[in-house]
Image 1 (cartoon, rainbow, N blue to C red):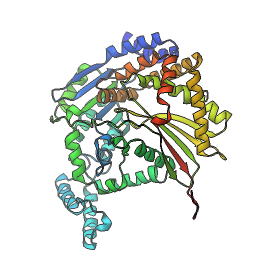
Image 2: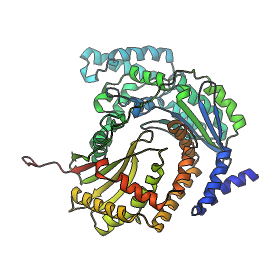
Image 3: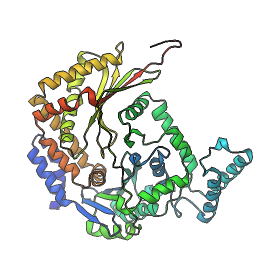
Image 4: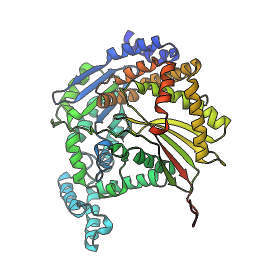
Length: 497
């Protein structure tokens, strides 16, 4: 009873004490002592955090595989593989796997060489139609999701990012063994059913997010301009030509190489008993065979020594993006830049919002975020919608004036206190969520080699000084380290520069 009460106090009441770093740091120290970490014999890392406040838990399986592991020609493969993980196994998603397996082999003989349906002959298209008619009779669509719902699960989903593929769900505590079986099964026995239909879904997703959306076009163009050699330049969803040519063999090769225990981490946070949970985890996840560690890109982007720019032409309102090269954690300047970003763009009281939105009325909104990943030196990305009748160039000039002014004066004591308080509140609020905490633990372990990295970052953030922020603004927010992106209307016919 004392433990339950203590955990409730730990995750609710310290949030109102965020102005006292000593209180939050003491609470986090207690939290870290509750974490259970173990590496199974096959290399799989397991992180457990018991929090018996409600009879539920969040389960996360994270694979160290993302867009950064792909090269031109097979971009988008890790994302498509994530989609396939929901299609089931040889037991889940089919009523007759032996028959389905033969039909899938015939399907692969038609499309497995990268051809499009439009490139097939009439007889081949007729054969393809017949195959799908037969497959539809043996497929049990969405069975994996139905099983999760049947045992009381919710929030079943997955994401693919630059470094990590995450699979996650919330379940009642009574469904722990079911989760262990389901998650280990789809790692052990994946079936690439509905692959080519799902490939079309991804192509449509790409069209909506990066072709029709000017913001998506701008982001993709800026990454391709800021990074000249590092795979950060490639979109996680993949280039259209690459995705349209991906085959089952391509994604099966990714699965065989990267879905190995020593390249994966699982985390359970919530109402779990580690003494009961660990044997179940070992029983099911311990079945996954070991494999060689796949490794990840080691190349570094060359130093940027001059400002770069790119223009996207689109029939929409103008937009401005400004992306500065920056180090990633564990570099000590990463938390400093986090505080700087919060001061500059953290809401209506921030420096740039007051200057560009309220005072100058150059923009309707102005924000910032870290992109495109966290495993390699990345970008501090500022973004703003341009307010009519102003131009992106005018907004850029206003931004530069505001940044130069800030570089001269540095942050005030009040700005530092407000920024740290908001960042602490956000961080501690995330820790109240079983899911957010579980995903943070696996990400820290995979990307930074320690599940404690997120806690360490937070403690370093609390120690950032005014001089640290002023120095970082002067060192990193300079034209030589940035890429500028504009969204501008398409030129009229015959219009010249």
